[in-house]
Image 1: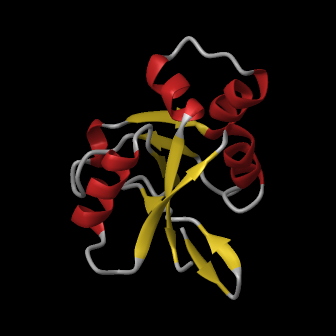
Image 2: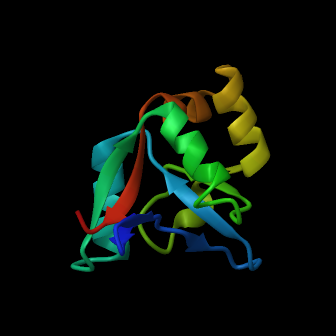
Length: 117
């Protein structure tokens, strides 16, 4: 994320298929490693999002994304990350349940990238 005119602007990744995803990380260190490999020196930083705030972001700022990418590896190797459709991830967040362990971890402590403040 970054701040543009005081508003949050999330880091959105483009998929080869043409869709867009929000990368979400369960651990701060993983998010920082990703940023160093993908956007070195670009002013982005990592921010923790409570589950409710992440849901709100997906329903507003990220309403156009097709899903979330859970714990993507270094830049260029995102294809190995787990993809969860936006609606499924939101349902899981809003219901507070999930059978998918990586998705559960990402919901409990979600880190996303921000630029600015």
